[in-house]
Length: 178
Image (cartoon, rainbow, N blue to C red; front, side):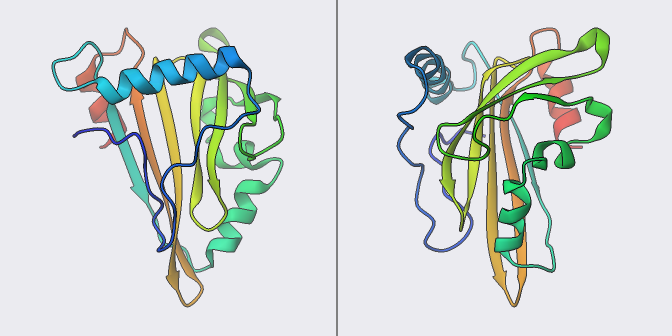
């Protein structure tokens, strides 16, 4: 599948990707821009391949409730499976345009530090986080919130990633989309 750099939210009226935030350091911005431009130029047969994980589920409550859950201070801890051993080091300003969150993930012998930038924030549609540092050469997680009407909604997680070098691409595809 071909990778779209600018994604659009799932609900009508959701705008395309917002401009890059101005509140991050120039070094972080350059690093993120480098990763995104590498991804945008990558095609099959290129130097790095990307895997897509896509999951959506319907819930019997409105988009506003999904948004409120994701805005909680402990949302990352609540939404991460315990087996991943997540420990938030710095929550930044929460899910706010240009805010970065730093955490450690993984069991003690495999623990890695991860820094993610929140961007493309839209309370009616969702948001994205892009890894600036972490175990993956590239990671972008788009959280889309789609209103289905009558108090129902569908959150959708779309993750584009390049697996760490020691993991073969075929194994990443099998593990990412069983």
